[in-house]
Length: 429
Image (cartoon, rainbow, N blue to C red; front, side):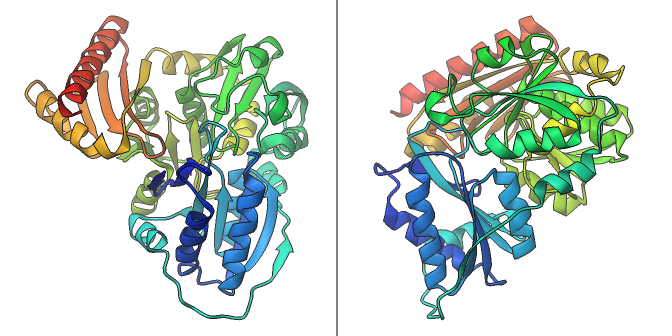
């Protein structure tokens, strides 16, 4: 089981059990000052039983709950901002046997301090039972106001991935003026995995004429298909940034692993960039600290428009990108982002070894390069090349990411970092 500000995730019935759901929801109930909480879930088979446990635990603590059913994470975030709190039953892009809990307070993810309260799981409050109602959302109408109606109908193909975007994504895109074709609507008939950032998206590519969007199971991640090819997750973030700059936004926060090309684009257009630890909640916290209006994570294809929603929002981003398809400069902007390349690898490592391994790697790399340890180990080779080794917040893996505008340098540095990681891993096992 993985526990972080990104939420609780595990394989249900193996290392994540009903008693864990009760414990963490019990702890979370202490953070709910409004007495109200929204509950939504993705389409995993274990979601329904966990949903009942979540609701019962909160009701027992006197919390009124609004049940949103199968609903994208961004929709729950919006409702949670209205009510004061929310829980999403999801493990996002993780394999289907996983599930988890994502906690929301005041429309944002929880902090490290709040996580400790959740983990403690102790709330002895005796209260009158809360009430349970079926909730409704005005997400589509609000998103349409931000995106605006398209001047000309666009053809878009939406790859649901068998997830919670099933109803909301097509409705939103049709509402702004798109003609929508849907693939992979049902989870049990889905031709791809839950993570569009790592899947080849073969069916979506084959069925896309103009532009296609692929979502993960809870719809906070979104990947773009254009001109017959899958675009990198950093392109999703980059085009979100392009739209934000068109809206007059100048202050951005990017996670440490987001493309340097996106940062250069912002600076070249008169903006300012802060870097945060990887993780949506870390990006949001940095945005709040610096009064930034937009940002996100390139690795997850996650763009955040703070005024609209304090989370990665693949649904909104799909509409924002659809609104720019006819922009004469969009291809030039994509080409700029693609002048830099990233290689992202992951190595399976037991969670209990993560900290020791990172420490050992830092000793080795520190003899060769100057390192930044804001989140893992980041080195800057030159102004156009960097590499980052960090432990995952959500899986039993160590991630290695390298970016450069020189392919030969990129491959050389990534190979060197992988060799260091594997050597250090053998040493500590």
